[in-house]
Image 1 (spheres, helix red, strand yellow):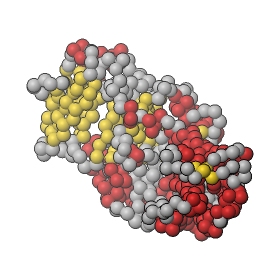
Image 2 (cartoon, rainbow, N blue to C red; image 1 turned 120 degrees about the horizontal axis):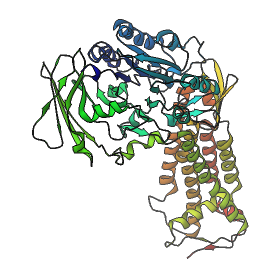
Image 3 (cartoon, helix red, strand yellow; image 1 turned 180 degrees about the vertical axis):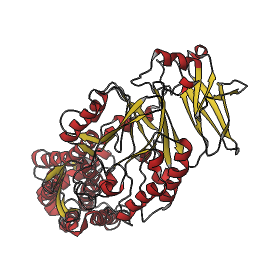
Image 4 (cartoon, rainbow, N blue to C red; image 1 turned 120 degrees about the vertical axis):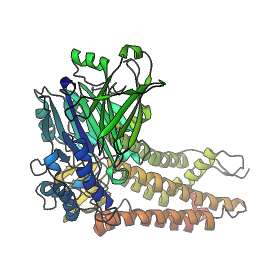
Length: 607
């Protein structure tokens, strides 16, 4: 059985550690358990630590900077556990590891000082692992962190400049070994200079198998299994975070095919089925004819535990009896049993595996499989966060919000000044008619229309704020990017920020002001007010709730970027004063002034 492991390499991934000196010290202590117990038991060829090694946020979770004590905690775990003597620890930066880091020579670039790979490589790098039989596999770490690494929140989307792109291309040039790519950001969150995308760069190599990442934290649990196969011919797998979920991933490249399982720390035994394959994980395979024959002949299972494995049992579908798997020997974690693959050529089947160690720990798993390449059972919902391209999505929703804000202002201004629009307060009017009436009243007044329009232009063009985006460095925030320290950097999260401002503040403000004017006009036709339509109760309460929300946003912005960015912040702080001034004007203006501003509107219909 010596040839059962000649083409087998297994390794681990861990991501989003977020080691913090303010919150949950268990992240540190359990990481030490992982480095000591888990690594000792599994004995991986490598451990990929894919970013956000430290939290880099202050105690209230708003401000951000690099804390040396967090990096010391990370460093001390690696040194005290002697993990580098047991395996190859391949760590790379995430966006939290670059908060408030000007460049690689910055005094607070602690990644360079305290990480394992940061001492050798400032950004992306490659490393090859060889098993005892001489099989090689290449790991390429992709560092897409911003430079300068501004403070949060505008440090979410990664970027690759032309230098980094060329560096990655050199790593895969003339490569003949299977390639495992890893990085912090999903490919959907990496902005690349020029016409290429990171997916095209990875897909150019026929040996690219998978891209491993973190960053999205399974979208707060909404997508706990975030996996996809890209059209460029490689898989992408996002791993749940260590921060809250204490997750890690076991992967194996076995006889030309990739298998993986996501595991919660402390759960033993750990089981991974390498054959039959995961049904949807058919990527750029490097299987040989010998591999195919072997896979058709044997079920192959990797099993690990803190103590010796006693039994590995397997059955398929609803078989009554469990079949015993045998260990291939030489201290290998590989267990095999013969099967007739031809019995399962059609349809979807389920393989059940039960593993027990000598201490009585038991773990049973069930995994669907199919030998029919025309059947795919990957969950569609698990793919969309990785298949999207977030820079384009964020730009699209920002542009849609601008149109939703500006178009009604311009359209109803035209209606109020250039057409004969009949205002009616009939109880039979539709919701659209009522909205149109309020917007006509709002846009007909110069004191309302021009401030709202000018502020909308600021939303489109900027600047949104000027302040300390880095310690001792002033930067300018625009919708399309950030200018700081002589460099222009793009983080499309600015689009999401502008979208949120329009949806949660600007559009509600337009509606509130228009409704206030509408109620004032209703008083002219002797409509009695109820409790809920009184401008002094309902509308005022909603307006001041809106002001309270915007004030909270200003406090949050102050916590993130300081007092200068708060004072010189047209997007947030100035919007409060603009809104208050407009509210005062709406309360002061008389019905007569409103009627005079209506231009060519012929009459007020009392029907």
